[in-house]
Image (cartoon, rainbow, N blue to C red; front, side, top):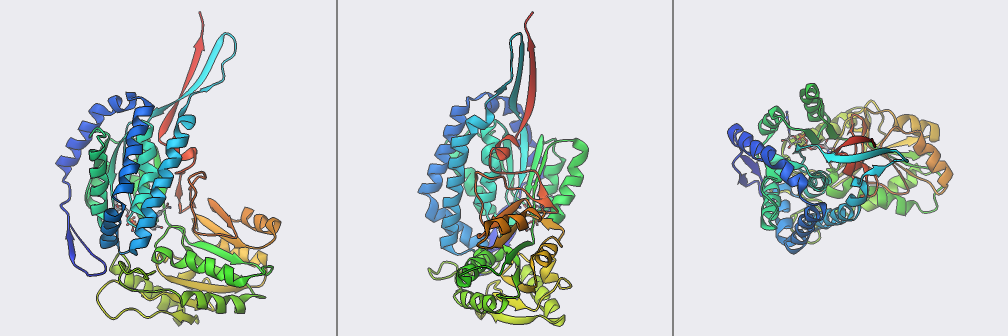
Length: 453
Ligand code: NAD
């Protein structure tokens, strides 16, 4: 299978798995899953701990591989691996409590809830944060006693193979975790296997297809999908520079290729002009170039075809009256670069305010009051995150409570905490990862009614 280094455009060749290999591997996992489930929890946790230690030891080498195949700046690749380790720490610390049986017994009648693993689960994943979104699924799934077949995106196959290698090196039994390499076709083959659960991270289009394919099997399906995440700047803030800086980071980090990137900004008319100036100033600090360069904040995009997709959104907006506030210079050499682009005078007739961009472009729209902001923030088919900046906590909470998204941010954006559920509403997904909910998601409850004779 071929993908490309998005900076040098050199081919990266990784052979895909065929259907026979997938079936063989699945049968091996299925035959041994009970053995894994019966392995004491402490022992299962110790493999995960060793996995995390290896991530730490190999972080430089792993970060280089990730940057090579996906194009994010090397320092952000390192950040991602470190972030994944802190999520693993959360799972190591909190799984035992989340999985311990609940006992509601009273004299003469035992009533208990036990958490049992699902079996062999499939994890079909995306390329934008392969470590972070990977560990959200395969770590708690393994801890719960499931075996996992993990399909990394075709754009991060090398990282997927490294993850498999680390699990092998720390002695995890091979039936517990198997990687499946390939693209859409391999994903579709996996869906044909009699899996006991499917957990997917990726686009709405693929998520809806997977949901459709899997629904007759009546097995648990988790979907972490796209977003069109809004950020609203109210008129009561003392320091607009700080807000502009935070918003700029939320838009451009990972080249905007995050499910929770800020995708549209609304600004109260009283501070609109000032915000545009400050935002432009922050955007001028972005450095596009070689992702291995220490100063680089913007590497190339991961996918070549996304360059023309983003240009399409920009041209659509300009043709409908938007104006450019800022456009970075694209380096004149090879690579799938797109210049960071900031537009003003945008509205909801433009694709840039309605369709997921997943790139370094942003529209900033002026609003006259909170009601208008709330109406526009909700005018989307997505519902992942929403952000409000206000120094009045009550006002901020009140606005957030009226937005239909799984996450609300007050005076921050584009962040994930392992303590809190990560869940999308509407076309942004189904179910939760992270938090105790994202541990129990990989289990099926069993109710015991125990009467003494
Ligand atoms: P994608 O849907 O193109 O691909 C995701 C995975 O699905 C890949 O492994 C791909 O090979 C596989 N796949 C594609 N077609 C398939 C099919 N017909 N059957 C089975 N598998 C198939 O998404 P992507 O480009 O990898 O990721 C970008 C998207 O992911 C964005 O929309 C982004 O917002 C979303 N995302 C969401 C979250 C979240 O937590 N909500 C996190 C990261 C990314």
